[in-house]
Length: 211
Image (cartoon, rainbow, N blue to C red; front, side, top):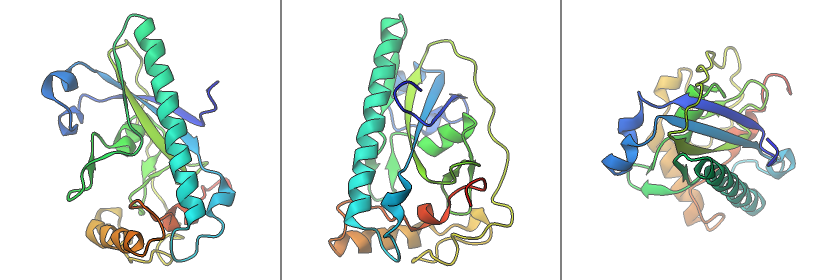
């Protein structure tokens, strides 16, 4: 937390380890996933209406850089303490067609007790909503795992109407991944941003304690 992080938790990754896009030997080295989160600056979302903005894109990249550095520093500390650690990039796609990364930061974050999966298909924290980003450190350092946070969006449906792809549904299980992906590609093709990002549902999801 001294590094300026907003969220921190430890996950037992035994149940999701096989999903990681890592070499078998490397994947099996680690028992725990340390989930680190950093809150977005609310002002960076204010000018988002029906599409992402260059300002939000810049903030998104700076936040990923901050998280990657924090994960590296923590991993170095763990190694210097006599254990193994591997920081997983905050935003690095390994399969563009299937939209897969080395691992799902939100799944690790959920197991680490940082939030629940919302209708918007994002990890939602009760206080921050979806206005934060995550990074993960894998380690064999003996740690006590946190418990997954139980919860759901309840009566909140603020993200449904603004979604430009209409990908968000009443039931979170019905989230339309392909509709979302196609809209992200459209935004990138328009030259607004250089990555597959949106930010509209992130803006809509501000947390129950800050509405």
